[in-house]
Length: 128
Length: 268
Image (cartoon, rainbow over all chains, first blue to last red; front, side):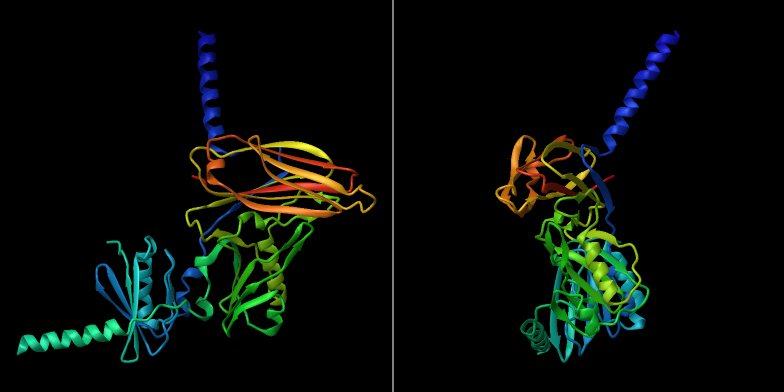
């Protein structure tokens, strides 16, 4: 009976060892190795530096950003967002928008000048 | 009449919008970081603002863009295998980001230490060294940098493996990523050298093999040759044990060889 119990324990231990083994990287024969952790960069959201932007929600999928008199200063590469001019009053809302849009890539960007105002339209998949 | 007025107003708005469309430009100043062209990166955020001064520009090998609020260029980082020129971005908010371009193999992060006759089995990155140079010029205390790969936002780890041959030898190494990992890119930095500088004593030939196929060979005399390359994804996959072999032949013991393998992946 003890022998059977020992055999079962042994098989379980081997299985567990096998599982653990599979979850880690196997390396052999190298002089040295180092794992560097990759962490998202906050440089994409320097909201604290922003001033002079007016914007409003157009609908549930679109945000319009108005930058009066300033050159177009916005860039949206994939999931990253840059705003260079946001006033303090708008900042909280913009942060909210950013938080909402951060999880998904922005889909399209349009910009136009009208009456000395730059209108920037960000078509974003806002998460409800 | 009313309908005509609505159409007219609509036309005016459409013309104003449609004809005045302008392309978006990258932001200037502190927001000018070119994330779309960046690859593997190391970054620090200092507590204090950084002043963009002439002294700071001297840390750069070349300056590509500079304003009152930011500077971007390349910094020369030299190790015994060669020189690397990572891009570095600095802004007044305190960001220092050293990065390789998206098209450059991540293996260029390997900072070879020691010398051609006595390579050291130590791993440090050229990106860290670039940040150190800039921080020194800006007279900033240095903190431990973080890393990120702008090409692969989902990646959470970079593994650097190093094998050196201080003399004529052949060594075999193995690496296997488990099935539950996502592998984004694998690249290597391989070199061989010999500097006897006497008759033909300085001849050498170094080879690198992956899973039984030779992927790089360098041969020369009284010099150093290196290869930095991405490994095609079909040749290196998760849940497969990969065998790498490095060999060095030389006429006299005045040289060395080495390989650094860099993997960018997502671990669960």
